[in-house]
View 1 (cartoon, helix red, strand yellow):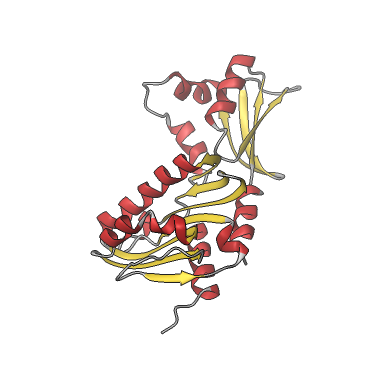
View 2 (cartoon, rainbow, N blue to C red):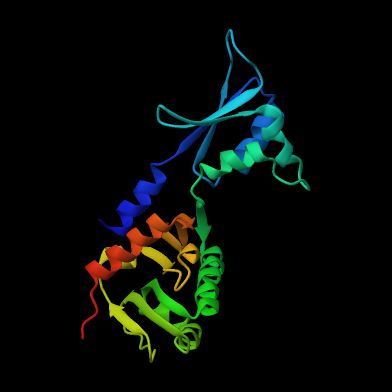
Length: 233
């Protein structure tokens, strides 16, 4: 297990939405709508059977089928999701996979940090790559440490000093830490609040990874961090 393997596992769990007898405009809308949700939208042609429908599958396993009218309705905007479309979304795991720049990574991290602040309990783990980046977030994590949170931060020493009372600092000069940016919250007293951001810096200031509410993925991230980087007492 590694953070990279978690990213690879999520990246490899793509689902396929095969749309039969749809026009080009609907296909384009669907590709935009599902573009960040690990769903590949393909065009199909029904032969000798019903027309105007779509199927969601993973590998050779069919997850659900939906009428095109039900599929296109939510894309019009300003309408409640119909039950058939909600069923389709229920087969997705709440994981959004995308490319991020540094500004987007900071903004997404803030969402998770704010959730941990509001919960006031639980574990929050965050990786900053290097101490220089961690130092810019000292005030944020000093404030978070005032809550009843068990906070762990990870970064490689680079000559920058940090002062974070109430926070466990893991100084780790390994590629897994220097190449990834992550924030993971275990939900505190509310397991449904589990969430995480994990992305790899594949080019300078360009990150590729995911944001997730999937509790199993969050648990995998936290289990790896606590096992690989135990707290030294």
